[in-house]
Length: 511
Image 1: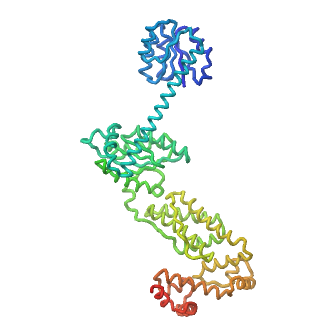
Image 2 (image 1 turned 45 degrees about the vertical axis):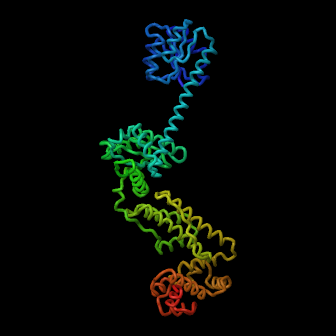
């Protein structure tokens, strides 16, 4: 807070500057002025908060100065200091907005007291202005929330009044088209810095555009009056670019349809929200409308069998670097797919996680896994989210087998289950767990109760039964998916283990 001393008597001027420790009082002392004219020339630039001035000076007097200061800086506090104990002067000074009146013979503590009272009045004004701003913003947000998000028709009247007051609409008879804009500004970091950036961007947009604004979660909501400079998006793009350059941030904006009534604003808001949901797919910045997403019909929603096998092999290897690389590649493929939609990306990412849990359940001999539903950010952050979830699956498996005396047998069982569609020799599996085939065969039978061939055949029949239950795949396809090229031999083995042919088994399940 700054204070300016004005007096044409050098002794008084310098004495007030040196006798009182203004810095200790929390005030920055500006260079003193020797006349009202000098002070008036400097005030618009230096903007003092407190003015301590003599009344009687050569040229313009202190009362005239106080009048001009009140006109230029209404919030500045003026304290008159004079050698004339003249009540008439005091009355005139008070009429001109002077907040205190002291004699030059006043002791330093009296002058300090007057300065501190002026400082407190200014701080009270600032606090009141802050509270009023917060209340205004809260009311604005409440009204917009009720109209745009809740669709509360009872909020129309106060919203209309608010819009007219703030220049978005003049009156109901001259209702101009409006549209909703959702805008995200990022680049300053998270938490308090992110909120600070949004607040600064909102203030700029409020000044640059004919709009009513509010901050909602991670975005700014604007209701725009569709003027010539906005309707073609040219003026809007310039405003967004101004925000981006001034605040050194990245700006993504989604524009809803143009509407002609307050009751239709919710539809414009919903459309803007639909476009905004594509933020990670369209890019990190720019201005977009529904035309930019019109051709997107959705990408893949489910992992392929090949991808599930790749994931299983990585989870089995316990290699975090390989898992990170694989996840990043798969997520980026989805984000870069020109047909992808937020829902299709969500579904595919969920499918990746479910594939990991499905593998974990199979490896532990459990049933079907519960779908661990998770909402992912549809942008590069999804890479970290998916990686963390699959890393926990990988850790759970390897922690579970770590304390078992023959952990390599558990690993071999999982390997067998993941490769039932391929030729699975004992030598191949023994090599996978780095054991001599004879030793592996001996320990495997002791731990599982079955020899290697019996175990593989049993698992193939179990998998075949699952496929027959869950799908309408042809018998030949079922045989191929569990490692049999000869359908007749497969059917014989299936009946031997279940007492029914594949066709009879499927029919019994339906019945």
